[in-house]
Amino acid sequence: MKTYFKTFGKLFRRHFTRLVSIILMVLVSVGFSAGVLDSTEKMRASLSEFYAASSVSDLLVRGEHAEDAREAVIAAFGEENVEWGAFLDFEGDAPQLAEGVTVSLDLPEKEGATRVCFSDFPLDKGQNRCKILSSLSEEEIGDRIPIAYGSTDGNAEELLGRTFRASVSFGFFSADFDFIVAKIVIDPLHFASRDDPSVLEKEGEYLPLARVFYLPQSGYSALGQSLSFPTNELRVRVPGSQQKELFSEGYRKILSGEEARLSALCEGTDAVVLTLHENFSFESFYQYADKIASIGYLLTAVFLAVTLLVVLSTMTRLLDEERAGLACLSTLGYSPVRILSKYLLFALIGTLIGGAGAYFVAMGLSYVIYINFTWNFVLPPYSSRAVFLFYLLVTLLVILVTAAATFFSGLKRTRERPAVLLRPRAPKPGRKVILERIPLLWNRLSFKYKSTLRNVLRYRTRFWMTVIAVLASAALVLAGLAVLDCCLFQDVGTAAMIAVGVIVVLFAAALNATVIYTLTNINVSEREREIATLMVLGYSDREVTWYIYREIYITSLIGTALGLPAGALLCYFVFQVMGFGSLPGIGWYCWLLTPLLSMLFTFLVTLALRRKILKVDMNDSLKAIE
Image (cartoon, rainbow, N blue to C red; front, side, top):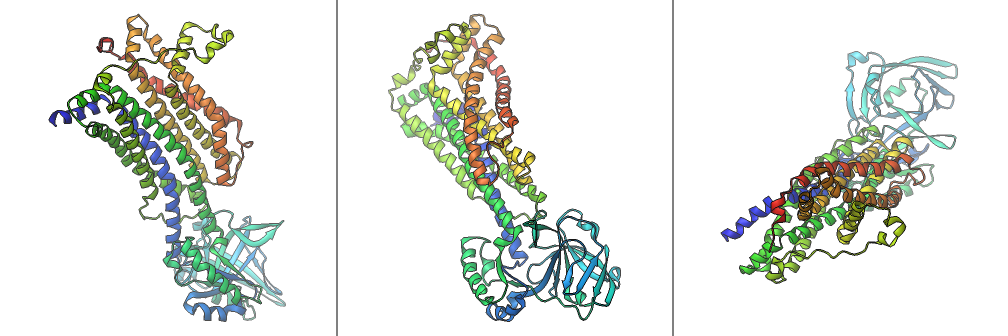
């Protein structure tokens, strides 16, 4: 056993580079997959916690005669679950409060609609609790009518203490009143900082809300005894809804029956019943979470496929190099399971270390995606709830596939006779490659290019494995660039979608570089005798490195060329799940940048491998194994 355990240390020292490659592959793919997918869970958790903490209304009844249904709604849902008020949306500075009543406001110009909400319920209590960002003291307010301003942009704080003059005319009556912005608040129903629609239409489209003011009913009555604005909004909380995750199946089941009951109570009036699905802030935030999840599912499949392909190749080739070690342990009487346990441990340690690092990458990535929504929303607090579901699923999948591939690949070799394993595997016999059947092209090539092409196409499994890995990486780069192009230059999507595009490009670049480095590093390790032979024959350092480089560049070029049509197909599916963008709309520079970036990654990898190639020991590599 002591001798057996010593072989563990030797295995890790001899194949340390491959261990690092496995770690990096798992780190990149699991970190990306879990980060993007878990970010959607974080978004949903943050939205649900915000909904519960702010006691957001589940249902709204809106209409000029909503007042007519108030008593029936209170009787059905309980007075503690029903609030009411009024709101008025208008464009410009002269809203019509009631028939014959006009108010002229001195407001700074801002495109969109202005909403004024009237209610006797405190802003920071009851339903739809506003978060008060700042407020004035009673001394600072003086005899002016205090109002609150709903913050939806970064300039809201500048309005604190701002005084507005309102000129009211009603028949022969006219008077001037001063309003002062005494509070800056965030309304949980209006935390979208862009495109939140009002009830006003202009040229067939709803005007976006430019600003929202909150005025207590008592302040409104100060404008004159004869003025009145009837209740046109009822706010209803459904009992038991807060115990369910927002928009979950359980939440929908509770709301479906209550929505129908409320609609029946409002029958005969002009009132309509609205759910949070009709609220722009909640629905758009939730929809963005769904879009990111859809993109994540699609790209995760590609990332994991490439990772598992490369890890499988790494462990398969490692076992091929360990043929002599397998034979010795088998001769000493170790069972196949005992022999394979150290190789399984090697693969599992690499996967677990990569998975552990991927957790922190995923957490950081999830937070980066979330905070990029600040361009479009006054974000709810980031949820502190631990989210492990996708991280655990993806990591477990990688571990299971890696362990299975290592075990069954090794089991096949341990069943061979030790005498066969002790002999080096016979090199694959040479054969004509397809280009040799085209004399017009083949005869024009120099010897070094003929040799390179024969080497590239000789080992078909290795060739296609590299091509497929590079193809998938190039497709991911194109998908990321396409998302960036849509958001940046076609003015669709959001800043958060831009962040997702950048993340996809960066992680695809890391995956591309890791794939090429891993497969090429394995290729160099397997061909040390061939490289040493070239050195003995007097090839210069430049000639030796380019002997390997040419093969890498040709394989990468083929993979990148095939990656463009594959990337186009991937872009098509990405656009379908995002709901915007199209293949014809992708900028020409995306199609150009993708192969340039892929080949740049390949070039940087070859520079990193130059030292390894030139450090091959001619004496050790050319020693007879027999």
